[in-house]
Length: 295
Image 1 (cartoon, rainbow, N blue to C red):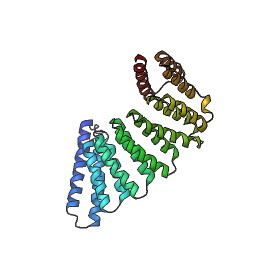
Image 2 (image 1 turned 135 degrees about the vertical axis):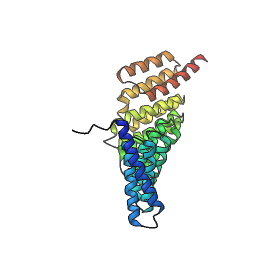
Image 3 (image 1 turned 180 degrees about the vertical axis):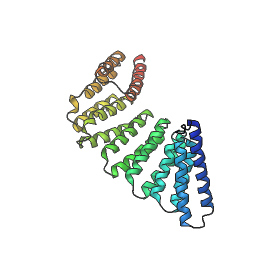
Image 4 (image 1 turned 60 degrees about the vertical axis):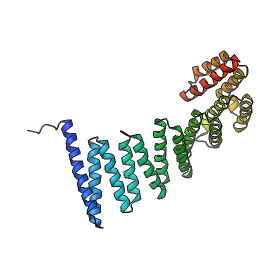
């Protein structure tokens, strides 16, 4: 007769027990190492086993530290690549319980990958840090890490990934009301996209975003001048719905016509739904327009 399956809670306790046993063995080996290479290798194996058992049990608060010990063990033997990988594994565990601890581990991994010339890996995990800060609504730090990721990606000629990271930087600048910086990045991304067959399709979207940021500054003349520059950048832009939207919004803003401003947005949204980022900024513009109309 086949044995009955172990209940889930009992199974979890079993994996945790094995993990703790392996962790204790590894700790003892490190304590009594005295330069023994074989004991060091055994400690690595036990930390790896410990971390795996904790992960199977979904005991993230134990798996994370076990991976960190594994990373430190690899660093002592001079294996930066394996250490970086272990820090990333620790981060994946901490993502379940503590984004800030996950960020700390990813930063260690990014620095190690960068130091050994693995810039694609550094870029990927730097972007992860940016995403975690985005989830925490810390846009200042998100800008820092998406910008760093963009530099890494650009250095590896990963233009699409670099462009994506730069766009995130521009979006966050705008959310922080740093419109001039947002405009600079959006225009830079648009300029790069014009010269790329892979990215060219996104040019009109980048220019629309830059135009919306110009409107947020409340300078109609600057928006009009920008539209002229955008046509020089991309002669097809003047035939797009994005260009038409911007020119109609500028006209409504100049006339201080809140109703017309709203109608223009509704017409555009009926065919091309506005994303949440644009809605936030356009609401800011509309409130500014209402204030001007009351004066």
